[in-house]
Image 1: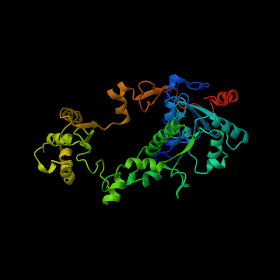
Image 2: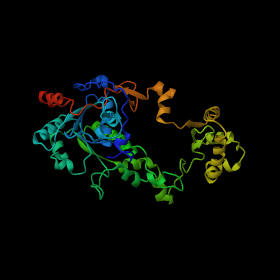
Image 3: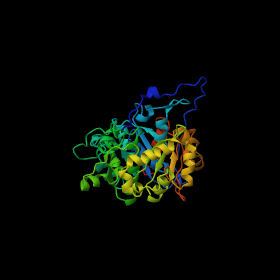
Length: 411
């Protein structure tokens, strides 16, 4: 899997401060989750995927209590251990601390017969196997799904690829950029007179991780051992809404509209008098009418309906742009709130971290001294738990293999 292009890892490394705090000692092994860790505490997952989409699926399961055993290769482990920004306190990448969250790390060389046998035994006692090799690789390693299911009939094998397990493109590399280009996303993203734009974050991998987690849980719930086929292209395509229907039935192709969308006007980002930006939405007719009145065009029949506002998009946007440009952001937000209309400031990570609602909700969690996203959802009776950030390579190998020798079916 791939994250969106950006500066090299070296360029992203944070400079060392003048005085470095002592690096913490590597943590010792941790045990399997208990019921206090979440509703999936009795589900064991073997995660041998790399980078983001497959490991992201496993992380969501781990966050709600699954015992996720991250099986990594001996020569450096998961790619995210070397990708992107590093925590200056211990020289570990922030990507790994997030992607490896709540997982136990085991090192196995699947090309070594003894380690391959250990892998098979781990899978024998597991509920889920997550992998993102190219189609056919698992089979070549000696871990063909049919063989694994014969040994463990309840096993769910979640396979995450770029294009799926079959079809003409099945053997293509699973890069997110390809899915972002081919799903229709890039074609509609950008300014009208500008080029198609790719997302500046790992959008496809994160979406595919959620899709894979949902599909995996659906398969586990079925009680039937099976293969779950998830791919990047079809995962991102789900976000395109009825655009395929509009093309097939009406011949409509959505153009690039910047921050706008074709059926709601005004909608976009607007610069305020103090140079800050506001995002405005009018997807409900009642809200649209209040915004039109707020910017001084309440009696204009051209703007009295969705169709009219879409037809006169340029005029509506010009009115909103001028109105915002004449007021500082705080005043814009106050007037929108008084009018019961939808507007929000455009935040950076700095702004988001300081927002009182985000602080009150604990949206940014502290996991072992590392600020990162909290749980993706809240369960009132059986919540998940953030136990630890990504652990050192192989930190739990000895303990997990000892558990395997004691009871290969332990879950």
